[in-house]
Length: 113
Length: 108
Image 1 (cartoon, each protein chain N blue to C red):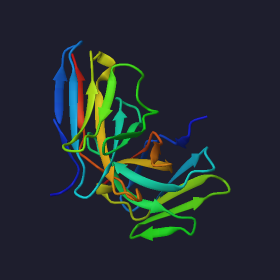
Image 2: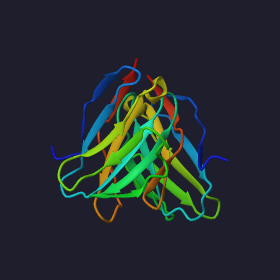
Image 3: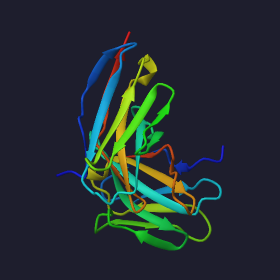
Image 4: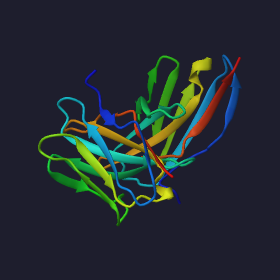
């Protein structure tokens, strides 16, 4: 299955720790998107990346959150000094250059205790 | 005003019923439109794209009215397996803007 792969699927962190979520796009895709879904809320755009470039990070919180998509390897969403409010499902999606169809990974569920 | 608005429901209908969901969006420059389906604690899955000419896929029909900035989804002959949350999605420069979803429960 060459779909969008996210790991870990479930992650538990204590307040103040760091969380790293990884996303490998679908084969042949060079565009990656991260979305967050808070409990009982809709999905919210966070960031759109191409290889080695952040194209749109307008949905990223100003502090503690960062994302990268290196030339080699998966895209990483990094959350430093996690707080309870960071508990959410984080979905990664990818598309080809045209961006007409966006495919989602199965999500990473972060729980901050 | 929210960028994408949907009636949250829930809609509870018997098997075989026809159900319609509506959605409005605020950005008239939005480029493309979709309906996604999301099951509990799963990723959203594309149900269908939405075109001004209307499009149909089996029991599902989607319609877009750009003048009114309105999108609809019609499900005919509902099945138990249609129970899910249906998300109206608008694409603004590769940034997907999501409605909060409409919850559908199909009962035997």
